[in-house]
Length: 111
Image 1: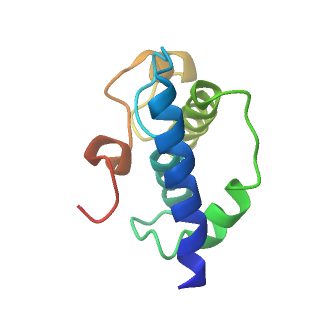
Image 2: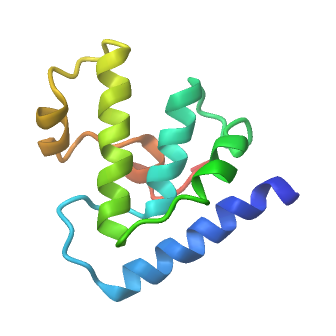
């Protein structure tokens, strides 16, 4: 139960950022981007298995929700390039609005 606390905190932060209405070209909740990044970094789709990563990521600070989403999208693009997952460059990946993880796409985990 305690391992789910960071995910809950990140969801609350993301909801707060969404309410602020930023004009970011990268859509989605920060918590969902962090979850997708953590799951991709350890090669799983299990959010429980990624909880250690989520604990570490909750310590990271950003200037805005947009800069957080950019950070996680860039990190996921770099992972995709490293693992030859059909990404030709980080720049192309960042510009691709369809390059999002399942959690961002489905607006939550376990859906």
